[in-house]
Length: 161
Image (tube, rainbow, N blue to C red; front, side, top):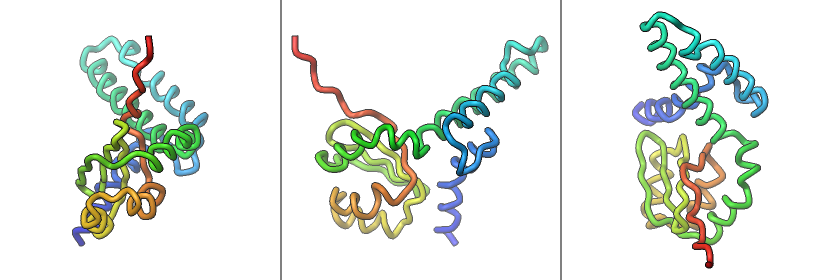
């Protein structure tokens, strides 16, 4: 039962974000953008004169912005756009550190990039740790098997003067 509860917590952010914006699994980026803009027009703080309503609108708009950016970051179209960088990181960089909480695995790569993987079961995480954070294991069983998002881009090489 604990695993099921952790899975719900891991999926909760995705489901809550979709619910807030009125999106589905099949919503494309253009439609997601339209949903976002419509909600922001409706809940923009400048539309309200009353201080209480204005404050509520500010809080709502913050949630809308967070949900939109989160859904864009995990969207397959975003992954397709960043595929080359992701594949370069997954094939050439080592995993330098990781964190795991509530079925969310946060991987930090040697090139400075960071990715979050959602819905990673405890048994897969345990195997990953028992392999000392082995990139080969991660490539086979984690990197393309779970919903993910890039949290931080790879460090750029220093520019020559």
